[in-house]
Length: 430
Image (cartoon, rainbow, N blue to C red; front, side):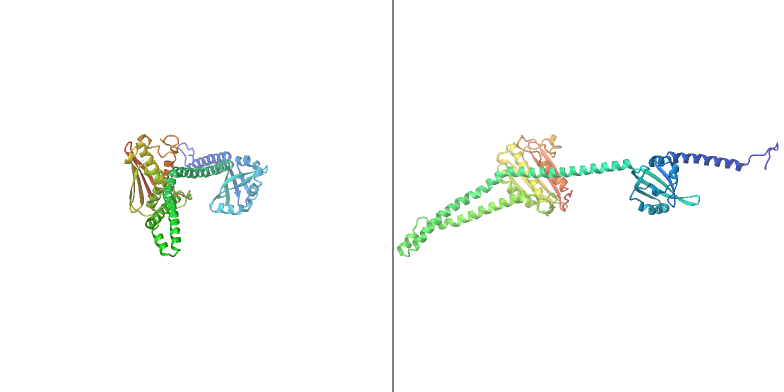
């Protein structure tokens, strides 16, 4: 041992170091005990045989047992009914690599509560001991249940909203068809009128022909000469082919009108898509809307060479009709007389087909640009519009078909609606 000049022993450095280490260990132990005792989560030390070897205050509070009681129990004693079959497998996994799982634990009074268990094996005192941190997740489960309930309610509300959307779509279509009904009736009535007139003429002609045949049956030279000289026989023979030709033309017109209306107004599934010819859809819709348009404007068709697309044809036809009727109404309001013009143009860039519908109507004021696609927005007087046509058109083009729709307008000059649809078709399924 080293001494000082006064022969007093010097303090050994190793003793000082050991004291410091002992103090640090003591402080760490106090911190550990504090964390262990006052942690909000349940902390258990579990032996490899399932015996609980240590428990903190949160465990006493959660289960209703004292610490001493817990130390006489197995982890299986704390498991809820019908959860014991997994205990051994979970302990083995925890000892090897750690495990996190949810289960049910039971209290001293027999009640059960949901828990999340995080357990891992550690080497303590020469043996593997499981450190299990257990969290009461009752509140979380209540929140999850509430979220599930709210999600169910939202799902039901969404289904109702979709149903309402379909009903609005059909109401708008029915409103458009109602608007067209008188015009379609007029278009059908014209050919039917001359078919009816021609049929009456044919009846008269047949009466005359029957009289002539009766004369021929007399088989007399005088009778034949008399029959051939029957007044109007030459006119009848000349007029009958014309009458039949007119009847065929009228019947064909009626067939085309009825066919066009049937194609336009069929009730399509909301998600049904098929090959769709946009140019044919335009021609079909023009046929249906002919009477509404012919008194308002001349229609110029500039239909390009475009591919068929994947789309819901009935819905696209409805959009075209909405645009055409809007143009006709705008031209009527602008009082263009015989100078009203609606121009329809189609084109394709390979990925999209485009449709431009232009008119020289009243135009749209700039302050209305941001609102024209809003539901129920309309500048028309009461009874002249629902305010649904453009909003439904927007929904069909943008939301259902993943296309684009825009408007360019100058007040007093006219408006152009521009529509683009993907060739491949991207109809929304929800």
